Amino acid sequence: MRLMMVMESRIGEIILTNDIAFEIENTKLDYPNNRIFFESNFKIDSARDVIDESYISSNMLKCIVIAGDSFTPQAQNTLLKVLEEPPTNIKFILITKSKNSILPTILSRMIVFNRKIMIQREDFDIDLNTLTLESIRDYIKDLSYSKEETRSKIESLLFSLQKTNIKLNRNELDCFSDAISQCDSGINAKYIFLVLLLMILENKRKANKWQKFID
Image (cartoon, rainbow, N blue to C red):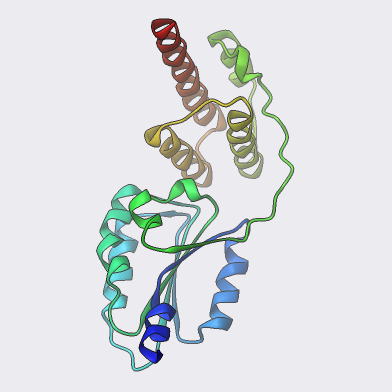
C-alpha cells in the first residue's frame, strides 16, 4: 500500500492554467524541494537542463516544474523518456496554458488538471467564414498592436476558429504557438497575422476542394 502511494505521488502532472506564475507559486508551497524551469517558448536546451537536474540525486521527493506558454516538439520529444520513467524521488509537473501545446505522447503519460478560468473572448475582427485575400490585406494594412494586444488578438483568432468549426492540424496549431513566441520576441503584428490568416485561408481552400470532391 505504501509503495503504491509513493508511486502515485511521482506520477507526472500537467496543469492547464490562465496564470502560469500563480501555479508555479502554488507548486512551490506544495513541494518545498523544487526546481523551476520556465521559458515562454520552451526549447530543447531547457529540456536538457531539466533532464540533467532530474538525475541529481535527492533523499526526499523533488518536484521539477516545467513551465511555458508553448513547447517546441523537439523539447517535448527530448523530455519524453524521462517523463515516462522519472528517476527515484523525482516528480514532474508541467504547467502551460493550452492542452494543444502538448504532444499526445506526453498527454497520455501524465495526469491532466484543468484549472483554467473561462474568459469571455471577443470574436476576431474579420469574419473567417468570408475570409479572402482582400480582407486579409485590408486588415493588416494599418495594423499596429502592442505585445499585449497582439497576444489577445491571437487568442481571439483561435476562439473564432473554434466557433466557425474550422479544424486545424498539428502543424497549423504549432503555427499559433510560434505566433505567441514571435509576439513575445517583438515581431511586428502585421507579419504574425499575415502568416496566420494566409494559413487559415489555405486551410479553407483545401477543405472546400475536398468537400466538392466527396459531393
